Length: 132
Image (cartoon, rainbow, N blue to C red; front, side):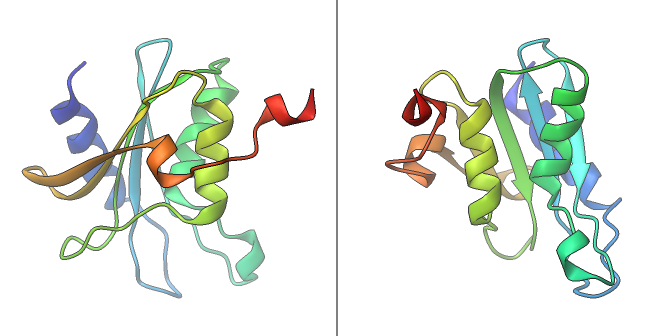
């Protein structure tokens, strides 16, 4: 698997977004330890609390298949700007990013993206280690 495949999968997932209230499409693709790419899009609800972000949709799909270790993630929102994960998504990413340096590709398009790590996006994060 290469980063281009992950990026392309996120871009494709964005087009499946259900966002009749915000009209803001987001797509995500995650790579977990099984080597498969899982995709997700944002799914809105008239009761806004029932809305789910693209990143969490993709992660929950992977976890529901038995995965626990996130390797990489790519996400795209506005193709004219870099769309970063929201706070709750950063917390969920941290939960499954057991190894340091998990790459986060923040995309405008297939050729225009930046790469961050989970640690850069969520320094000093609260993790399961804090519960021990």
